[in-house]
Length: 252
Ligand SMILES: NC(=O)c1ccc[n+]([C@@H]2O[C@H](COP(=O)([O-])OP(=O)(O)OC[C@H]3O[C@@H](n4cnc5c(N)ncnc54)[C@H](O)[C@@H]3O)[C@@H](O)[C@H]2O)c1
Ligand SMILES: O=C(O)C1=N[C@H](C(=O)O)CCC1
Image (cartoon, rainbow, N blue to C red):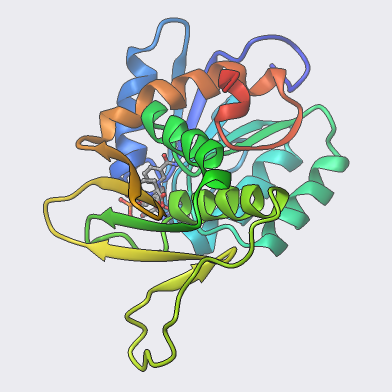
């Protein structure tokens, strides 16, 4: 089936040997009406992607853009979970998709429904608070920092603050030789913790004189991402072009 002709049924996974890719293979095999036709990992020839209607891509930041380009050029829809996409890579993908307007690509920094809600709640809360910071906590095998979720959360908060006419968050720090105040994304401080035993966790902290709001999400197991991934596989062909964020498929 090419990109134009109905609901996707056959699925290939890129990064299939990884933590997420192997979980996705199990989820696709267990999903009604979906068939896993291809498993690809580093060094494999992607070829015709085993004839898949949809590819799910969970690899590494350095490889993801080329893998997605390979799919788009063959008219295959892609659900992308790999984080660390820079602005230039996203812009190149938009240009490529303009040549394949029937193809849908979803890039979602987090497929856990609770994490999508956490980001939406943070965006909604942002204009009411003078201070905001993000703490993300992940397993120590993660290669990118800050997490894609934290970067996206900071972007949503930063934009909401700007739209509301809020200025910079208050911070009197003038001496920080070791970077103790964390990274800064869209004007929001982001702190990355890497700890054995963790999977994927985030706290968004909002402060105002006399009060504090904490929004926290925890993924204790990678199965938490699977309902979102399967929903995306089922819907991606209905959303031609590039979509960033699963919230756009969920009506959030
Ligand atoms: N969006 C989400 O909800 C979500 C959730 C978890 C992880 N992630 C992201 O997914 C990515 C993968 O995470 P992980 O924990 O599964 O990592 P992982 O290291 O366990 O798996 C990555 C896999 O990609 C393979 N790979 C490396 N280079 C490749 C290439 N050129 N082509 C194909 N495969 C290649 C590796 O061999 C490995 O099997 C990361 O970017 C992570 O941040 C996103
Ligand atoms: O385990 C990871 O790696 C995760 N990456 C995503 C991110 O960077 O936000 C989502 C959560 C898990």
